[in-house]
Structure formats: C-alpha cells, structure tokens
Amino acid sequence: MSETIVMDIARQTIQVALMVAAPMLIVSLVVGLIISLFQVATSLQDVTLTFVPKICAVGLTLLLAAHWIIELLLGFCRNLIQSIPEFIS
Image 1 (cartoon, rainbow, N blue to C red):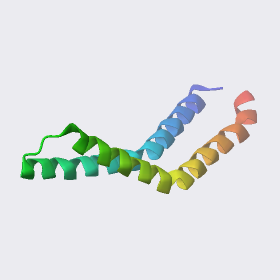
Image 2: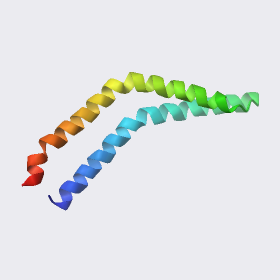
Image 3: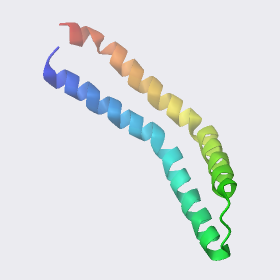
Image 4: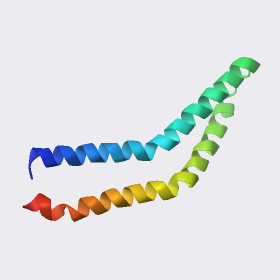
C-alpha cells in the first residue's frame, strides 16, 4: 500500500465525516444565531432558551437527513471494502 493510497483514503474519510456532520452543524449555527438575536432584542439571558431549541432542531435535522447520511456512509464503506484487493497488491 503506497502513501498515495493512504492519503487518498484519509482525504475521503475526512470529506465523508464533514459531509455527515455538516447538516447538524449548519442548523445548530442558524438556530443559535436566531436565538442570540432574540435574546439581544429582549434582554432575556436564559441558558435553556438556547439549549432546548438547538437540541430540537438538530434532532429534527438528524431525522430528516438520516437516510442521506446512511446512504453516504454505506457507499463509502462499500467502496472501501471493494478496494481491499487493490490495497493488498
């Protein structure tokens, strides 16, 4: 197994990890920004006001994106397993 193959696998792994995490991170960022603007406008500084909506939004996003995430991970694993003979030789 050459260094090029190892670097390619590492690049693909990081790319898949970022693609899997991106929907939840983006939704969390947007919800956090909206809640922060609401808190600034109302001068209401409650910790649960930021935590609960973020958890609900991320959970909903995970439910909606679960099929896509599973397909992405299965495709990556399938390609990796099918490439094993190439790595050995």
